[in-house]
Amino acid sequence: MMIIGIDPGLEFTGWGVVSSTNSQSVCLLDSGVISTRGISRESEKLYKIYVSLLSVLSLYKIDEASIEKVFINSNPRSSMSLCYARAASTISVMSRGIDIYEYSSTAIKKCITGSGMAPKEQVSFMVRSSLGIKQDVEINNHSSDAIAAALCHVYNTRNRNFALK
Image (cartoon, rainbow, N blue to C red; front, side, top):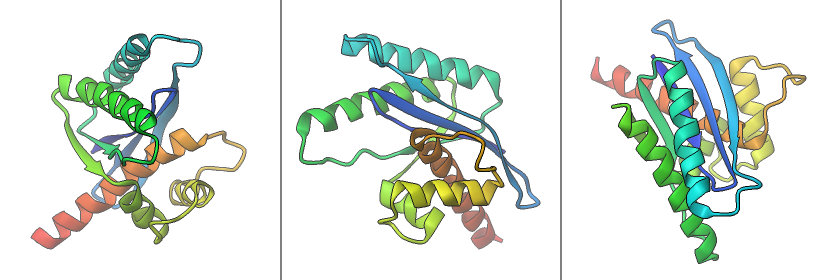
């Protein structure tokens, strides 16, 4: 099964594609960040996220997608921008007929690190450890969070399948 994880953001949208087999192994196929820095109009940023994700989706036979849910923080403008980026990401995935699953940031962190309040550095460390990614391989926080979302879905899917047997 091939899963794309998405960490939506208006300036930086992280993505990571993992492959999971029945033998319980998971490997990272690819990851990256869609940057909209230098683009001033919000509509153009959203379009770039949408088109860029479509491009990534066309490279792989993605079975399912995992995306981080939006949480409302104290800055309404920031929350709205995040909602827009998430919507652009969701529409990209749904336009390809791919099922998308949503997980809160806390749920992803708890699944990956054991603590829903883990800092980004701990999430990144556990992502690297789980997938055997060497320290000299550069993966920024946006990609790491997206890969964590994909891993969270892999682990949750395995637990559901195990419970059904």
